[in-house]
Each structure stands twice: as C-alpha cells, then as structure tokens.
Amino acid sequence: MSKDRPDKLSILVAEIEALDRAGCLDRWWQVFGRPPPKYLSPLFMKRVLTWESQNMALGGVSARTTRRLQQIASGKTLPATAKPGSHLVREWNGRTYQVAVEDGGYVMDGKSWRSLSAIAKHITGAHWSGPRFFGVQ
Image (cartoon, rainbow, N blue to C red; front, side):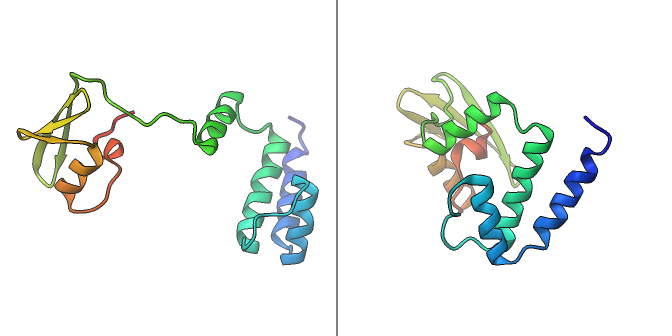
C-alpha cells in the first residue's frame, strides 16, 4: 500500500460527508451506475458510498465473503439446522433447557415441537430465531 493512500481515502471520505442529498444521488450514479433505492436518507447513502470507496481503495472483501453475501441476498441459503440425534442445551434465567433433535421436529420436556423458534418463544415469552437462541450454526 502506498504511503499516501490513507490521505487520499481520508479526503474522499470527507468529500462524501460534505455532500447534500443531490450530491449523494450524483455520487451514487457515478459509483453504482444506477439510482439508489427510493427513500434512502442522505446519511445512509453517505455510509454506503464511504464503505464502497474504502473497498475500492483497500481491496474489498474476500471472494468467499462476497459469494456468501450473494447467497444470503438471493435467498438461497439453507436454514441452520441440527442433525437428528443431537441435543441442544440452553440456560435461560437460571434454568437449563434441553432439546432433543428428531426427524421432523424437536422434543423438550416430553413435548414435541415443530420448530426451535416455537421452543424459544415458549421459554422466553418473546419472538426469537430458534437456531440463534440455541446457537445452531
């Protein structure tokens, strides 16, 4: 990396921060070749433009990360699941909960459940992503 690269990047970031809405729209066209999605605030556009400028100047994210982000954006990701026979354990408010993973569902305290999210809601009283609540990767 050249010695003056951070200085150029700092200047570019300062220029982006100084843009008004019309300037953000113009810069968006220059960077992405299309208009931004409707209703984006100038603050959000500035953040995206700054991030993209940093990626261009510093090399961006890895190819693996880019592929993964594209998978997520396209909806082609597989949901996180645990394999049948697994046991999930979660401590919540001083109590330990154990869930057995079976074909087509889950069992906790002798009761069958269709999803981990339903179990997480039962435990917490609030809507949670079940896989996230139980740490399933």
